[in-house]
Length: 189
Image 1 (tube, rainbow, N blue to C red):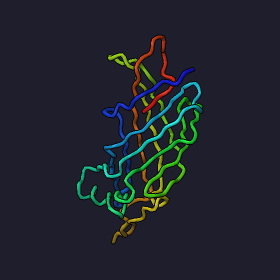
Image 2 (cartoon, rainbow, N blue to C red; image 1 turned 90 degrees about the vertical axis):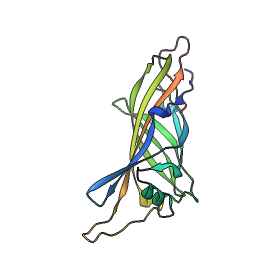
Image 3 (tube, one colour; image 1 turned 90 degrees about the horizontal axis):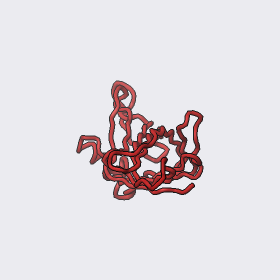
Image 4 (tube, helix red, strand yellow; image 1 turned 180 degrees about the horizontal axis):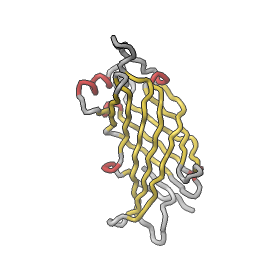
């Protein structure tokens, strides 16, 4: 079985995060500039791999003042650490047909192991003659594990920001349909 090349469909893909704010609510954000590569072999997932590079300065929560603070040394420190990266170390199929992806996340100058739970949306031939595949990957990390410790104690108790950050990656990938190919065997995002 050959490994076929795929491309990110950036219009239909995103990398986002959620963190608890003031104990009672959540703030969502995303990164607007990122790239990467992925090899996906549905029949032999152990042959698959993924790597993603994210421009830290592209953080976007919809609030410019907050985004400026997130780019500062209190959080991402984008001058010193301009990029976040994820590199897989192992891919395995779960009993339900989805996947787990073990890997290393590098953020704020610290690299830690993380596990992504990946929902495979399947693949199909689109109306423009390309094969499409969809994936949603999720994980939760403790920002303090990456040296991001800024917080503020509230007068009413608790702290301004939660330590746990939920990450959601939605990928739609495409490749040219080869003569006789009925299923995508690998992807390059």
